[in-house]
Amino acid sequence: MARIPGISKIRSHVVTRSTLEASRWREGALNLEQRRRLGSDAGRGSGGAGLLDDVDLRILRALHTDGRMSFERLAEYAGIGPVPVRRRLTRMQQAGLVTFRCDISRHLSGRSVSAVYFGSLDVQDLSAAEERIRALPGVRASTFVAGPFNVIVDASLRSTAEVPDLEWLMSQEVPALRTQDRSLVLSMTKLLGCILDAEGRSVRAVPLIPS
Image (cartoon, rainbow, N blue to C red):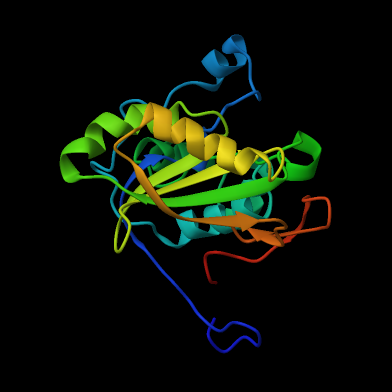
C-alpha cells in the first residue's frame, strides 16, 4: 500500500479478540422470525476442522464471486457433485472456517456514514464492557487490539451529526472507555474484496483467495 500514490502513512492494529463481527449485525434488518430461521452460530468452533484442500478453496473462490451461488453451480466450479459440495460447506461452516454475511448499500440503508472510534479500557474492565458496547445503536463491529489503543468500535450512522451523539452515549453506557481518536469514512470504494459503485452496490469482486 505504501507504493500507491497519495498514501503517506499506514497504521495497523493487531486484533486480539473480536467482540462483535459485522456479519452478526442485525439492527433493523431482520424481524424475530427471520433471525430464528437464520439460526445461530452457537457451538461452532475449529475442532476437527483440518486443512482446506484445493476443492475447498475452489468452492470458497466461487462463493466470494457470488455468495448466493447454488450447489449445482458450485459443483461445476469445484469439479465434484452438489452433494459433496453441500457436505464440504457444512463442515467448513461448523468449523468456523467460512461465514456468510449480507451487506446492504449504505446509501440505500440510510446509514451512509461510517464512524470508527479508537479507545482504551483498563484490563479489568474489558469483559464487562463487551456486552454494553455490542448493544449500542449503530455499532456493527467491535474488536480488542494491541497497540496505543485497545478497543476499536465501528459504527454505521445516518449523518455526521450522530458522531458526537454516539460518543456521548458510549461515555454513559461504558464510562470506563476513554475515546482517544475517531475517524470518518464518507465514501467506500471497496468492501471485503468487492468493488462498489457510487451507490455502494457491488459491481465486481477482487479474489481474496489467490488461485
